[in-house]
Amino acid sequence: MRNEDIPVLIAGGSLVGLSTAMFLGWHGVPSLVVERHPGTAIHPRAALFNQRTLEIYRSVGLEDEIVRKANEEFMQDGAIMAVDTLAGRELAYFLPTLNHGVEDVSPCRRVYCTQNVLEPILRRRAEELGARTRFNSEVISFEIVDDGVRAIVRDRTTGAESAINARYLVGADGHRSPVRERLGIAMTGRGTFSNSATIYFRADIRPALRDRPLSIIYVTNSKLKGFMRFESSGRSGFLAVNAVFGTDGKVSDVAADADEARCVQLVRDAIGVPELDVEIVVMQPWKAAADVADQFRRGPVFLAGDAAHTMPPTGGFGGNTGVQDAHNLAWKLALVLKGSAGPGLLETYDAERRPAGRFAAEQAYTRYVKRMDPSLGDHDLQAQEDDLCIELGYCYHSPAICPLGQDGRKIHCHPRAANGMPGTRAPHVVLDCAGSDISSLDLFGKNFVLLTGAQGGVWCGAAPGAAADYGLGIDALRIGADLIDSSGRFAETYGIDSAGAALIRPDGFVAWRSPAPPQAPEETLSTALFHLLCRGSGPQRHSAAA
Image (cartoon, rainbow, N blue to C red; front, side, top):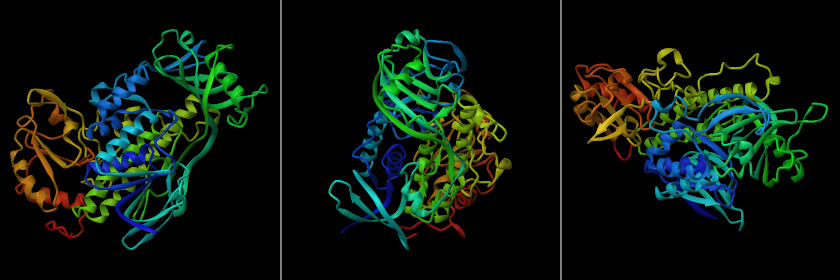
């Protein structure tokens, strides 16, 4: 049996697995992605990607390409609304446009992009950055050993097996995750509440659309409940059906009798055109559930994406939450592997991402009950929060944030009210760089970044020495001097004064801040980094053997 060594083995090569490999490569860490399917997604699996996810992809140079491809597929900024049928009555408008009221909080916009279009982009970028991908293969077993994980990978075509020795294993292998099952980690939450199906079809629905700019259309009538999305041509789309009703009004299993003729009838019932000419492309059954793994980490093994949390599509939070898992984990693995951080930094992945995953799952469930199935009952629903709180406002509380547990351990904070509080995403502020506008978010992505006010030169002078204690790269910039504060909002938005400083992690979250410089700024910064990097007992000079 062939033996291979790799720092990180990733089980699952779909959206989250490929994103994990790409982010690791961005930080200089090689990985191997193992995916049981022959290639990236072949079915559309249409998805909404929110502003935070686009910010993350922007940081590795992919935003423009993703937006261009998305615009080729869909009319992007339509309304989200409810109807009895597309050709019939309008029941409610949830959003007048997809990006209504959110343009000020981010340089990015929400977009619709199918996974069969996005995944090849991620795969190419991951491989450019040093990742290896092995499709039509699967991790058939693994064991935790003293120096990491030893896994057996089998080629599904030839049956040939390889032994992979990895320091870490990431299970990004979907909601039925074999990695999670082998670890014996349970999922808890709402369980399954609908046997659903998505029907991809071709039909000319332009007359029923009536030139309305619509993005997501929820359907509720006596035949079915579900939601629809159409490509910009108006000649193809999908219908996700969550419930179908018999003549007696009782709910039946959507996928149980969904042959081609039944799928055609369901599409006609949703569009509201009885004789509509419909071609069925494919029907994919799925279960609507809202569950979260009891642990996101066990030893050198981590769970991400659907392996760690499942949620209904209402709100579009699922895939985005998975990408954000990957982004959180990658820089931590990189710093531990390089010896800059202590192993305790990896404990913060569960501490930060599990509450965020549970919050997103509960918010998706609340929206499902309110929009799709009130019969599930609202007695124990989490109060519905603004979408921006889920997309951009989740808060972290862990040793990788200083001070730990600030502000009552909020699980979320509206991004317009966060004001650079440690544990929140660093705010978007427009800056002038050599005559061109950039976002403050464009400064983050690889290194720690120290941002100060115009009078913060003492901080910038201290930063290189403090970072050298840990072998870190750090960028230090005075806003108002090195970069121009175009909007005049930087200090207020980041919660500091002109001599204060904020330390931003590689994932763009505020790790620490000080309103003004102390007597010994280098020692102060070094101590902050010591705690944030979970180094243990006392600052130590970085060495290759650390």
